[in-house]
Length: 619
Image 1 (cartoon, rainbow, N blue to C red):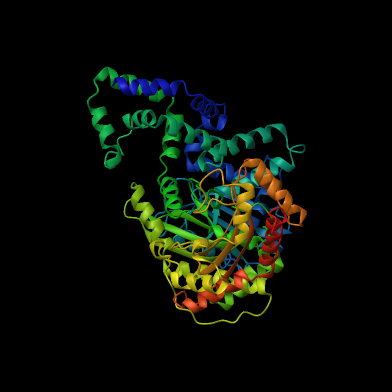
Image 2 (cartoon, rainbow, N blue to C red; image 1 turned 60 degrees about the horizontal axis):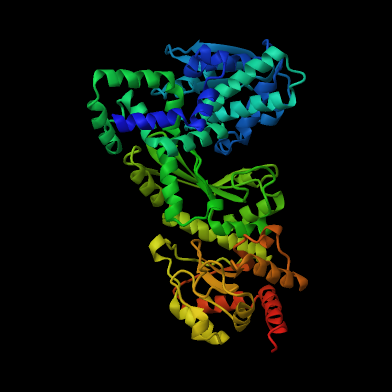
């Protein structure tokens, strides 16, 4: 056990582990009372918050905000269409009655029932903090409530409140998550601190910390845990598995369990003592660091060759966009509020009940005019979504969801394989093409001509650029063989002006493509079916790079400050795309390459580069 003891000793000296342990062991009376462990105690707190006449002195703030959250969630769009939420939000809830553990006729217990007589409104809330559903219980609760409140004009809202955004078995239930509860309370404390009694403020602050630990919304704790696990993986695994036998069937841990089985009684007692003193911290680090969906996602983005700015490896909702969607921002605008990666679209994976993996594509809160045009264009191309998504004020519209079964959630490779099953699906890649078509139609500012297209599945290994089309383009433009380089994914070329500037400014400080010069133009076949052209300034030596940029600026080209730092590597001077209807038609592809190359904006930049190259060359 000597080697493991050395690793455990190293863990004891980890500053990050000590900080994390301190965070988890700050005084919190709710954790002393073990509120965080029992669903019934969360229901008690929710009942207290929902009752306008309770001692929190917040009136109907929480109840109204909860109704607002139901409206905002994309999953509830279709379910809430017949409900007049607006009338509820601007009404008095002074007479709200909140009941706990209401017994139905079948002797089942409804967690929370809220009755507002003046509004003829009833909320049936099933609270699932950790436990799962029982067969038929949701249907039973709803039938009971409708039977008890049969008077004309009554609205019964069934709500399924969960910790992990699990979907209810009964589709009539509206979905609500504990992250919604967390945000409502945080908003109250942020904007009403001065008017909230100290005792109430402290109590709600303690409850916020409980929810953050359960939801893992505490970014600092997650980052600390990931650092600790990366630097002390063997020690964490050894300590955790020494006291937890439920991972024995996982092949990855068989070696450690064999090692543990050889320990004598005194060594086992020592491990029990160490683990017992730091149990919560060790459990947290193990669960965060060994999170299968996150680890699989990191392999997914690596294999899919996604740049770091195009994804976030969130432990519950790892998300990404196609890198080329960054180019859409000029046409679609930026989201009006903080939204995932700050672009118009987002794609995310999540684990679902029933051992399934789900992928979702969503349009976010971009400016309404652009949002309406985008959704209209998508709809023309057969993309379906809830029609309420076109209404002004709507912020989130889901345009694609799909699921696949995961054979073994303990296996990173199985989860990774399932991610690519969803990502490579013809239906999703068809959506990518339709998104590209729609945005291009918006950029052309003319009515799009819809044509029937064969659905093409862009497998990772089949994204091959036609050499014949590239040769046709180069011959038509007079680009010599020594000025071009065919690559199956990204054929590229240079111009004589680029070579002249290479003589003046030298080669790049690191190997860059095949010619190591200051500029390069290349084409690329994108995953969504578009053809892309890029003109880029490469990683020249710092002072020479800055000097070249200053000359370009003198002719009116604009650069961001980051591009003028001596450590900067790559700066794109021009990029544009065209949708290709048929990648097998070499003449069509070559024609689109020509159209991109002859773009007036690109030719203006190339003319400036040409003039600079001639100024001091004596030509």
